[in-house]
Image (cartoon, rainbow, N blue to C red; front, side, top):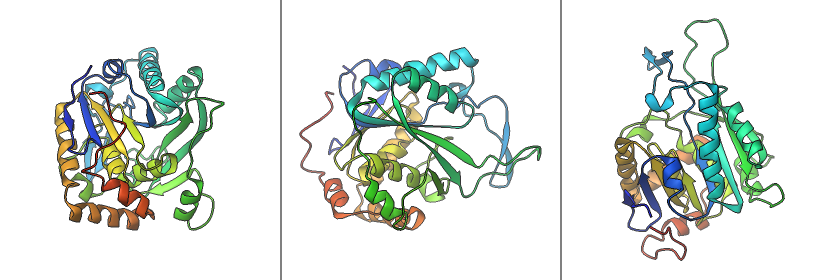
Length: 294
């Protein structure tokens, strides 16, 4: 049985330190939803622009490609472990670019998931293309799939429609990349914006749901989950990012900070934050009847 690296007082935010494949094999628990932001295998000496300066895009050894077959084997292993940790009606969201998303789709099909959507996240503020020999990379993809082809999943269609101004939401989402206020405790090189994760979580889970992130980084998934009254387990192999996660989670102990985040998200992405989310998010003292086994 694993030992938690961190667990919040209300037991709604838990972190494990270690290799996600090994950690996922060490306990038995089923989640309602998984969000995974795996290595894109992009750290091969490329450059980009950040705050007007040319920077290297290398993220670390964990993001380097080992060749197609090795990258495929890695993706198949962790996706397989995640499948074992999903409830039968659970869903998984996996982000990527063209560097890894086709391999991810192959693995999902081989492992008998049903792919529901491939959402295009169109960034409102992408970095420019330095070489001027092809189009600017301004989008990432998020595949949404359910565990069982014949078991229905949860989708909050009406809420997504309301967020979209009363019309059916499309699979192209125009949302900004992370803002400075989202990096108040430090930053992760592949950090996703809260606006993206809050939409994903509200679309596919009910308040009180358990959410897993096997590549938690600075735990944007967990912060979004707790803001919306969901519960979270994050796994990461880097303690420095887990420590950023803890600082971010402890910020939410301030009612003022929590309200500030919700207000900014409402402005940024039309987030609808109702009484049901608020009431579940405030259950800090009561605990939960369904808890992790560690």
